[in-house]
Image 1 (cartoon, one colour):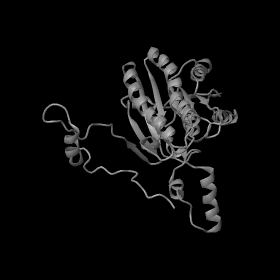
Image 2 (spheres, one colour):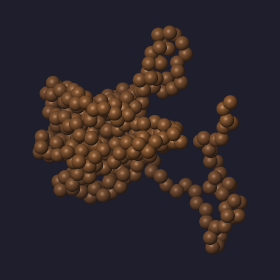
Image 3 (cartoon, rainbow, N blue to C red):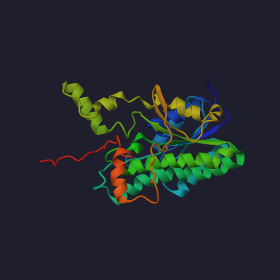
Image 4 (cartoon, rainbow, N blue to C red):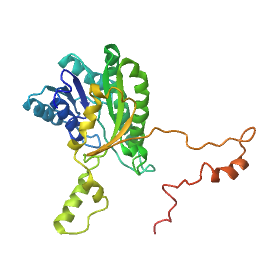
Length: 310
């Protein structure tokens, strides 16, 4: 069924490639006018190009839709404000904001530079704030709006991605609070943890190694099974677009894993075990005696000590 979003205006940051591109195209198919934002940089944030955003805008227009490009950097306050302004200047309103722009600079924490930390936090976390704040000013006045934030399963813990994991799990906390700030104005804010083949997950080096193994008939490289099982972005965006519809007005402050035909609702954190002293405050001796059989019972170290490599 087309035209679920007829008359709506949507912004998709990072809309020039991967998941963002697929989102922008489906929004347009459903009748929305789309602002395709993309700085056009590489996955690590280097470089810039107008081509990714322009190409998606052309695809939408060739199919009879309406779209404009924007090349601002979400990492700056001015960039976020300009992205929102683009929607107002081009289409006179804003109804949907998809915060999808992101990058990565993977490194073990003991090797990660301050610059590698900063650039990921600036784009993947600050960028969500920089666009959401001015959008919420509009949504509050019109008493309606949809915000969908792109988080990641890396936020649950992923080796070598302390910067990316911190930013993406920060997006989850941000989502929960914006949902509470804006819910009374008819605005919803939800987050997704996508599982799809993108420039961040489908790394060129690994893909090249997979192609060589196929051509030579040799063993697949480590991680190949994960990459080969990931669905293309087009397979996962229908649920994201659904969250932007009027039908989803009761879904607010929630997090979903989306991957092809599998969609999962994540539980919200809650206290699962509690201990209290019989009287007064805990002493270290009491804790040493009680914690192993209570709070720590059944806990497994996800990264136990390993012998040094020789």
